[in-house]
Image (cartoon, rainbow, N blue to C red):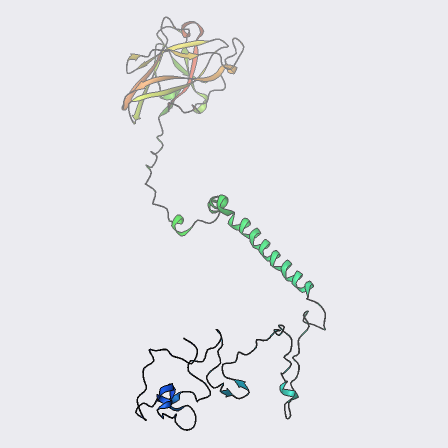
Length: 330
């Protein structure tokens, strides 16, 4: 099959004008089929182009080479061989102010970077501001450490400071037991004692503390004794029996009886003053012994027994008084 020949299978064209497309076929044209007037009728190209014209592969020319403006339709537009550089002005661009009647455009004004008189950044002001900030922070930390003390000293600061409202409210203290009223225990002197066994009162030796310097003399032989009736003992228990006495520069002692009962230890009447032998006036001193008393009234007796030193040394008895245990005799 050659160009322009459609082969044996080409349908036969109808006679006359029955087939509007008969002019496309050779036998139709022989039969008198004519194309529409004005070129290619029914949207088909005119006689200048055959529908089966052979074209090279890739040829995009349209039928009839119709043109639109200066460019032929179907003709490829050559690509721009050189791209415009970024930032370079367009050769075809005309600035608005260059056009006729265009308003002048003022160039933008920029302030100096330093903010003053065209100089650089104000580094001195920034440095002063930074130093001020650091100083404020340092003062704040110092004040916190001084007054707050931090987490590790907070408890110490609170303990040494004012108590909080919760801490200031203290529970009421339990009423403490009032101390017992001080009990004044009895005391006596030579004039109030019961004298037995040859004892008598005297005032020859100076230094006795009883009123008028009166003391009990004659307590220098076996059987001599003095008795004190004690009233107002608050409770039963152990008490100190104090005795003011005088010896002639020698040691002496005597038996103690409480309510007729002999006490375990005798009354020690040593020469505590250090007087020379025979010097009664310098031999005045005092001593004490524990006695067991009952509540109320008791009798306390000093007796010169056979085994006591008072039978040979002798002693003068001035005063007697009681004290609670653990207290001084004066």
